[in-house]
Image (cartoon, rainbow, N blue to C red):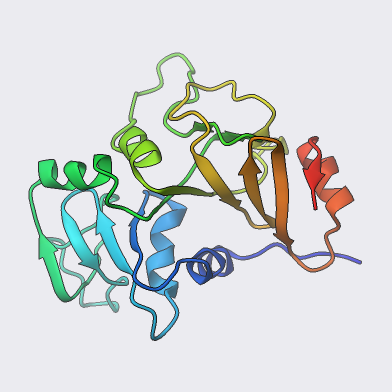
Length: 213
């Protein structure tokens, strides 16, 4: 049976589905920012942005953008009732102090045991841009990764051992991709779900690693 990849919006909705009511969540730059647009109706999720926002809402309607109100990726956002602005230092105190329930980050590589590499490919001339990723990866109670499963060359971003500079060690709890959702454990990868039509055996072939059911 043929399978179809999740779209970017479907992937964002899949991540949002797992965020529990009342959670304090940071959404990283890139794909994770779209999660804000898919929080289920009736569920209170308090979104934090490292540039100093708490109570961030979804993106504004076209024509209503306020570029004095942006997330860490410089995208215009909205502020929910009760939301607040604060100093960058206070934001990092939240991130480092264990006050966030979940952070959702992008990644270049994730190892089967949850090591994260998401700030540099280590190539000559690459600009170091770790930002708050290290603080988030270690400071949040749970770190989730949202990314494409394969590189443009067709190589798995989920690896046995990261070859890029590490952001954090054994910090990733879950990996959400356009083809599957996986849990990282000390024993390796565990399958949560796949898109319809994709078998665990086919996924193991793509990743080139064993996956426990």
